[in-house]
Image (cartoon, rainbow, N blue to C red):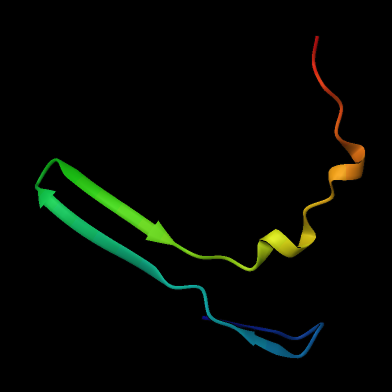
Length: 46
């Protein structure tokens, strides 16, 4: 959880962890960063 002073909003970005054994963990989470994705500057590598 974080508060952004610039846009005056509270962001909640959950993260869940599942531990199978001491050497294996799975994480699943969420972010709001997808809103800032800009696909107009995409260049394909040859």
